Length: 231
Image (cartoon, rainbow, N blue to C red; front, side, top):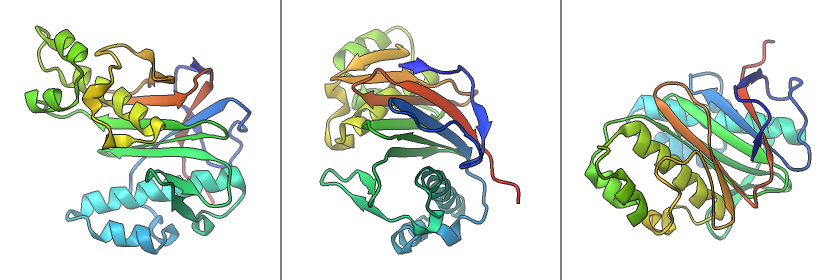
C-alpha cells in the first residue's frame, strides 16, 4: 500500500481536498469534540446514542457519526442529514444508493473514517490503556503469543497488533464473528498481507494505535485530518 504522504494533511470535507481516484483510499482523522452533530443523526442513531450510560461516551458517538455523515456526504454530493444507511447480511453498514465503501472507528477522543470507491476496507483506532494477559490470550494467535514471550505486556505493542487484526476482520466483513486468534498479522509488523488483505499501521501521535486494511491491496492511501468548515 502506497502512502501518498507520511503525515496527516488538514482538509475540510468538500473543501478542496484531493478527489477520489480509482484505486484511492482516503483515511480521515477527526477529534470527537461536541458540535452541532446531533441534528444530523437519524432515529436509529439517536436511539443508540441514548443507550450510552456516560455523557462523554454519548457525545463522542454523536460526534463520530456526525463527521462520518459530513465526509461521506461531501463525496457523493448530498447533505449530511440526507444520507441513508443500511446493513449487509454480515452486519457491515452501507450507504443506500451510493457506490462508496467506508469504515468507521473511534476510541478515546479520536475517530477514523476510511473511504474508497471500489475496495472493501477496514480501519481501527485504539487509545492506549492498561493491558493484561487476558487481552493477549483472547486476541493473539499462537505465533503472536510466542513472539510476545519475554517482551512483557507493552500496551503500544499489543494494541498495535490488535488494531491491524481488527481492521483486517472488518475488511473481510466478519468482524468479531471470527475468532481473532485464528489469523496472524504479526506482533509488530507495520505492513503485512493476510488472507488477501493488505494491512498497514497508520502514523499516529502518542497515546493511540491505528491501522488500515484493504482487500486486494495495491492502493494509494491519502491521510487527511478533518477540519470543521468556517462559515
